Length: 468
Image (tube, rainbow, N blue to C red; front, side):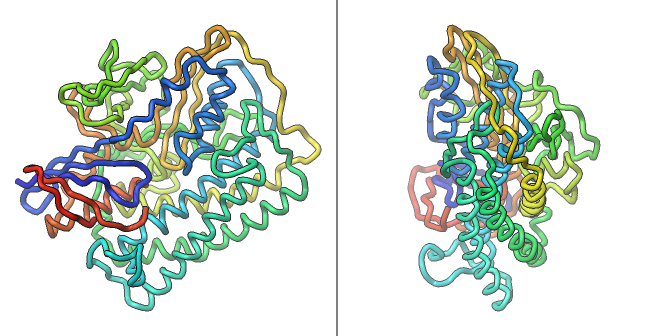
């Protein structure tokens, strides 16, 4: 049995370390580790509650608006605040623009180099492998779309900045709406950019993902996880508790959607570099402190569970829960679900633009109370995102965040059960143990930048250059 460590994994958004065990030409075990400690939950303590929807955006520049939304929802809950219809629509448009830039960037910049042969110049060389199957003409066509996708992902950020003030880390989302009003000029500029994105997604991006799926059919069988899915839903409808993407859970790949109860969410720290009063605790009650020397721990990521069950989250989960996509639970299914979701979000954004009423308020005044407890639930690009806040004496006394990456890339829990990505890696065929392209494809299907060499640390401690 060979044991190998991949660190850092390239073309992902976070510093990720993966250890795998290979036997009989397959991965038989896997360990995913987040190796960067940020400490945002500790940084939030003692701050003004109004810092939350600005400060937490710095957790991630690629999905910053989702953190603003989650923090705003948490304060809505804590202070019993309302958002006017314009405010809800504008929050959706800002969030939607960020979703489109992320989905475009993920598919073209992070995924495509695994399947499409780029030109013989950096960053496309050195190559991730030799498994490029597309006919030359088709390959060239997808490479043209690659460059267009990069350009359009930048346009999505321009679109976001129209109502958000800037991108990333917009400055307009508040618990009671959006501070930038929908003037006719802003709506017109936003619409022109959005129409370009929607046309590209409908006419080229969907074609591109179907093309890759056609030439790599075995990836509909590789990277199959537990089949347990969770989503908080996102994009609420004005003056309604309903969301365009509904919340829910699915277990064991069954079509029935169960109601989600946030009280069943826990986090285990058994294999995480943290200490706490309890090994397993609800995020709203938890206080954690870093402990780098903790025996047996191997990740800075905690292990979120729902009723003790490891849950996958993201576009594939949303597809299953909404009924939009239920073809499978594999690598290729994750990629297809994300592209099809981009098309749906783009169409919804066109509808939201038309529903804006320039003469109506988009932001309501509110007061910060001395105390309160709240939780904000939404989905981000990669899946379920929640913020829990407790306020005492007008200051944040407790802040807890559970991100999509925590759900997907969690380590083992208190029962020793693998996280979703760890489970999805098990059974992955390995044609060449010194060239783990298949492993890289599984990891990136969960949305983990540019192609480059990776260092692999082997069990004996030697280091070699390695490409995935």
